[in-house]
Length: 144
Image (cartoon, rainbow, N blue to C red):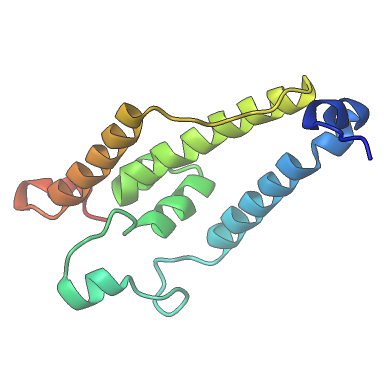
């Protein structure tokens, strides 16, 4: 039986067919944002409490992420940044990566995300610094 490589299979699919997965990912993210936009995380009882915050009193890097998404959906960028600035950067990074992914799909090219170790370590360091600073007394402006 002859083998078919991914490039030849990709060439035979139509553009709408190739866009099904990126469209599905966008639909799932949009649905999640719509839910968080409709169900206010500032009201107690709608979402589970962060276990790290509950048991230790420390803010994890995700603390305030739902409040940030809620404010972002309602167009309140200052409140979104105050709730979790790193999450807002994540929303923007997702938008850029998703757009690049769609452009690759439309052009019939595979997209491969292969970050260099320096980038991975830098992002980890940013996450660590963000977490530590938001839990220090002078990092109060990063509290959700």
